[in-house]
Image (cartoon, rainbow, N blue to C red):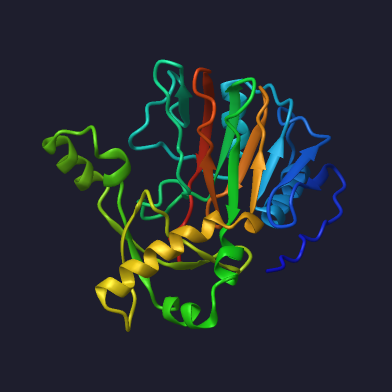
Length: 283
């Protein structure tokens, strides 16, 4: 397998340095508290080029974090995770030595929505002295690396997405029924087309995808294929890995990138805050 390295474009306002040949770039020379249309245009172009952007030393208040997210689009309110007072757009992801939590599975965010998020902007508030990195996978490359026969099978394949596996475990039967009424299962294409670049990406993930429908395959064959597709994100050549510092930011395109929070910091605290951009219906 050989992955062609990402082309490095020229930018006037920012410095962009890829961190792997496949996905991810660090951006420097920018203060995200000071925004204008030209800067946002350059950042958006870099975001589409690299799928995940990383920043260091961004000491944003919660209000400034929200303002930066809104520069890229409308922000959504998460249906299951509590927000801090005064900022319903912010999702707090916190782990302590007493209550360790990590999203230790490859996934796109909130794919059980009719319009899954465009992307997310995650800010490190408190990070462990070591460990707690986040890995990202290029799901366009994950699709490209499939054989032609599999691509043909997936051309008209669809998948059902639900919140039940991830967020339903602690709910009573009455609460679960209400959650299903408010957030019913959604059917999305297994291979979605990026609305801005036109590139195709795999769009199934273990936490939220419940089943697939593949014309020409029986249920057992379809189940085996679904689990095979989950594993595509685990290919090292399509990944990057980000080491956090306080004030670091990761901004990923949820339409074509999956992520994985590495759970190797037990005994330390970690607090991350995220804003999430409303997306559109996959096609």
